[in-house]
Amino acid sequence: MGFQTSGGERFLDRTVCLQAIYSRDVRFDGRFFAGATTTGLYCRNICPVPFAKPGHLVLFACAGTAESAGFRPCKRCRPEAAPGTPAWLGTSAVVSRAYRLILEGALNQGNIEDLAGRMGLGSRHLRRLFVQHLGTSPLKIATTHRVHLARKLIEESPFSMTRIAFYSGFRSIREFNHAVVSSSGQSPSELRRASRGSCMPPQAGCLELRLPYRTPFDWRSLIAFLKQRAVEGVEVVTETSYQRTIKIGGVPGFFSAFHEEAASRLHIRLQVDNYQGLAQTVERIRRLFDLHADPVQIASHLSRDPDLRPLLNLRPGLRVPGVWDGFETAVLAVLGQRLTRRAPAKVVRRFVRLFGTPVATPVAGLNMLFPSPETIAAADLSQAGIGEARAATLRRLADAIVRRQFEFSAPTLDRAVSQLRSVCGVDESTANYIAMRAFGEPDAFPASAPRSIPETWRPWRAYAAMHLTA
Image 1 (cartoon, rainbow, N blue to C red):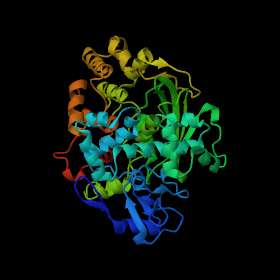
Image 2 (cartoon, rainbow, N blue to C red):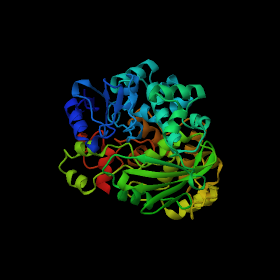
Image 3 (tube, rainbow, N blue to C red):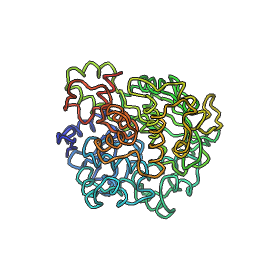
């Protein structure tokens, strides 16, 4: 079995996978899963339980594929706790974008026809692409993702089962119970009892989550990038933490992220009065810190370029910083933020103070929500010292979002850049910067381009740009 990249090359084959399994190579944790036909369980390659012989192992690109084939997750290695499976990255542009939308909850409220429409193709074709590239359907991917979040909440949070069901994205208690039993072989109540009371009350009303990542992880460069561009009142960034205000389903709150290097994960503290949008929130946090990235695969691909190789060795695990909110990023870009510089601090500070929403948090300096599109669409931006041309662009952008004529997702990178240039009135480099951070486009190239951008960098040009400008 092999997993294909967009160029058709095979970067994981059965021989490599078996070597990773029997050596317990942590670099491959979450990149694939192994199902044992003798037990009906599927495991991470780092599982402490002895693996079956090769003839009894079936390899899967992601957890959803394993569960579609009738395998259940191992209780020892807990596949749901593995770093996000990156098999979809760089396979099919359509699949990768649709997969991201599923993780953000596209199928929690909508259906497969709605998702396919957003991708600009028919639902049957979308299903066929998922089966071709991942071996399972979009709906199964969504269900598996909901179950994994639900299990985390069952075992680590104090929430009732009813709350967990809806916070995880299930539409009914019956659907929730059925999905959990089908996946784990145990009811939600049995899973909670088996956790032996590990679900401790959250500190000061916070929900605490731990999000794993794949090593290496260049936290220092990532946090430095975010600190240089932090919006006063909205974000507080130190060398060891990132904190910001947020809105979930119209309800204000905030979260804090701390790096736990020894455990290869981020410790998240989330506080909000209503966790209804929790699944989307967790995915947005993962994207902000680029936790889905597979640094080994990316570095292996980019290191073919001898000019990039020294930079890759200098900063192993360099990530592409994402964003919490696409509108916020586009606004800052219009105001002057680029990959290599921040927007004017005085203008941004005045903009947030005049048009943002005050909130109360226990974190010093964290007291504002970034202005909403609804507010900016009707605001007199000259009060913030913003010139007429930029003010018109910001109002046009905000109005397009309010009217739902524009959203921060597109079926292709070219479409994303075209839409951003049209709506935001920015140049191609800036449009690529927004696409890289707000759309999560790994192939966007926002830096000042060399005479010709090597095609060999695809589909990871955004990472090449980060190394070139770091």
